[in-house]
Length: 221
Image (cartoon, rainbow, N blue to C red):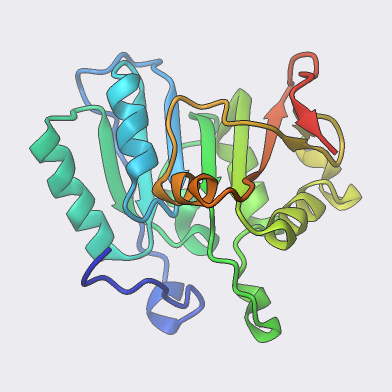
């Protein structure tokens, strides 16, 4: 996004003080409507497409860069989308302030910053505290949807979620243990996903559900 920093350090002092605020569902949506949340939404192409195709759902884009939040809010108003909201959050600090427990149907964590350098690995977002917060905020049949174009990042996320120490969370891989999901099961795609596929590269996707149904054959080990 032109004029907006591509990366920020989520461990910087200005971001470590919790300041995210609770979000209220738009009044025109049904009280029990499905809630889809994109974490680190950036330009939010995925969220905009999802909101346009699923007007009965509440779609929320959360982002640490407040300039992105403001730009996305302006775009939503310009496009007349009333079922989409945007807000600031530092996922690893104050996500627990945004939604009440058991209120989100699906979290989307799409193409997070890879932080290739060893000294930056600590900035990767999938870690035990975040998983605990996601688990608390997911509804009984909720889902975590993760995707990356970097195999090492996807594998690291899978390793964290499927570590035996996280078993108590009850998140189950919908494609089977240590398996990636083939294809995009969502009716929307991020700009990063479209660029990756246009280059002939692969998207490494994982889906985790609470109380998941029978495993799907759409999987890849």
